[in-house]
Image 1 (cartoon, each protein chain N blue to C red):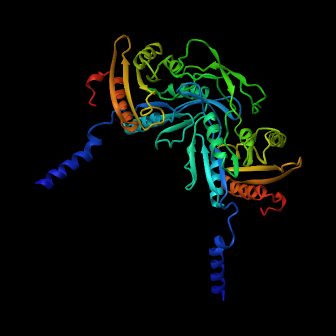
Image 2 (image 1 turned 30 degrees about the horizontal axis):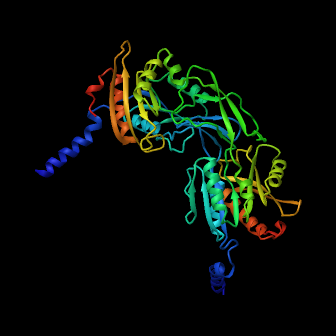
Amino acid sequence: EITQHAIELITEQEQLPQTQPKALHGKRIVITAGPTREAIDPVRYLSNESSGKMGYALAQAALNAGAQVTLISGPTQLLPPAGATVTHVISALEMHAASLEAAKDADIFIGAAAVADFRPSQYAAQKIKKGTEQHMHIALTKNPDIIADVAKLTPRPWLVGFAAETRDLIGYATQKLQRKKLDMIIANDVSDKNIGFNSDSNAVTVLSQKAQSTEVSSITLAVDTKDKIAEQLLKVIAKASQNEPLISTSL
Amino acid sequence: EITQHAIELITEQEQLPQTQPKALHGKRIVITAGPTREAIDPVRYLSNESSGKMGYALAQAALNAGAQVTLISGPTQLLPPAGATVTHVISALEMHAASLEAAKDADIFIGAAAVADFRPSQYAAQKIKKGTEQHMHIALTKNPDIIADVAKLTPRPWLVGFAAETRDLIGYATQKLQRKKLDMIIANDVSDKNIGFNSDSNAVTVLSQKAQSTEVSSITLAVDTKDKIAEQLLKVIAKASQNEPLISTSL
């Protein structure tokens, strides 16, 4: 009898993929990941702290949930998940171009990259020689806002942004959600080195706002590995993008 | 008879470590490697293209040649060679402090790191929020010159520098050799992507100048893996630092 029960359990588990359709089956998801590098000359650049781990974990979780995934990645040391279409970029301008192109055909766009806000106004084709001066300055020009430009597309994908902050996390994240007209923002506190850019774990607060509404709902995912957080985030994104309330999500 | 000869050959090879002392046996060698990162705020930084591969390969080659190796490394994704004493640093100021401390007891100092010439004059403890402005600038202050400061120590280690240039390689390298009072400089052309910062291979020209002499001698090592180039460089460094002429080196 025990054996019979065990066989039934195994059979149930094996049937799971067939009986329960994957949450994002057939959805086209574009995910940006990693930092960008803004070249000053052939050897010097500006960049951001970002390992790309969160974006790559989201890409893997989206593949697991049945989605078609395009990963647009800045320079990282990570191996892209098998099955994703990957576009490698270096600068914010390159990431902007690749993102707008890919977003045209996307159902969901997740901007997980740490894009440089500014780039050097001039690029020196030869290495700049230092002289005897003790001070210098670099003039910077603002980069285009990738996710805000994706939000202007018609039709536009369902839009998820990230807010990496060192203080007033929820305040800044709520402003960013509304100003950039995102559907959802994932806020994380990068001042905590245990859950920050280069760590393997994370803890996030998810804020979302329905179109034609000013009500912001939120849900907090506790400290866990980036892989687990990514899996939970994809569940939340799958539900919210299909207009199901966050509160009923089975986390 | 053939078997007997083979056994003799094997025996000879096995005896090699005992019969021929290692070129750098007991020498204390300090090697800097990788880039430095100069923080603007908790998430933004200035850095240089450098994988650290050349410095790490030199550390391994120095260990193989019998040296006691201290590796002072900026942020890289590399695994340090077993047997080296490793100090991890982020900024040029940290690398400067660690280098001067380690160089006091060193026989040979090899500056292979791509140290940032300048750092942001101010560090913002909180992430700088971008406003609506389209332009901004970062004020920079010159970093101390690590290898020039090591050259001022009494007694000073035998000093090897690197010149990574995109044009007029030999001209700039010769100037740097003489201005910084180095014993040797290893010049490589980083405009060639096949032998540059992040590639696995390299080709270099070695320039050296004896104390109390204005004569610069040079030797060129052809394109090879960074491991092979490192092995050859350590042979050149071992000979030159013991006042043997470069010309007689068995490369």
